[in-house]
Image 1 (spheres, rainbow, N blue to C red):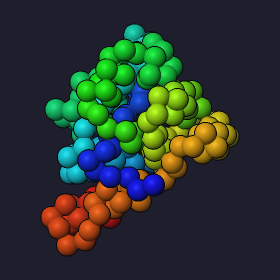
Image 2: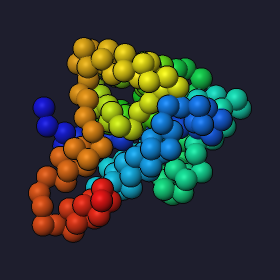
Image 3: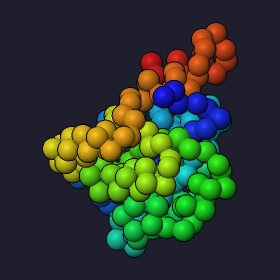
Length: 181
């Protein structure tokens, strides 16, 4: 199944200040998620941002807040799955898109539970593998395997950006090409 711009929605899951320093390969992950956010803006895709238990985990990383700019209007949640929050599910329904591009942390908790719930609700979760992580590499590996077996699409940042771009030679293509260099 091809990922299409008119049917895709980006979700940034819980990339928060207090937990993030403990995430495996967090510096590379932050750079990749920032590129993802910028790419989604170039492609004019809607972006939803969630934050898990802000009192304990803090806000979204400042560099991502800056990249998100006008898109930064986070939905606070206490449910591990984004789908456990009515504001989130209402937002999905209102946007009417079925391919949900997931990035964030932690792979084996909030990302996994969101992806599984999305599958149950007849959405197509697309996991951007180099834009998700956990504190332990093995937890991420197991979560990716489980999501794949559950029918989620697993892809990479560069792959999804060019898939959504569709053709070369456009201004959008040029901006995406510059972004991934």
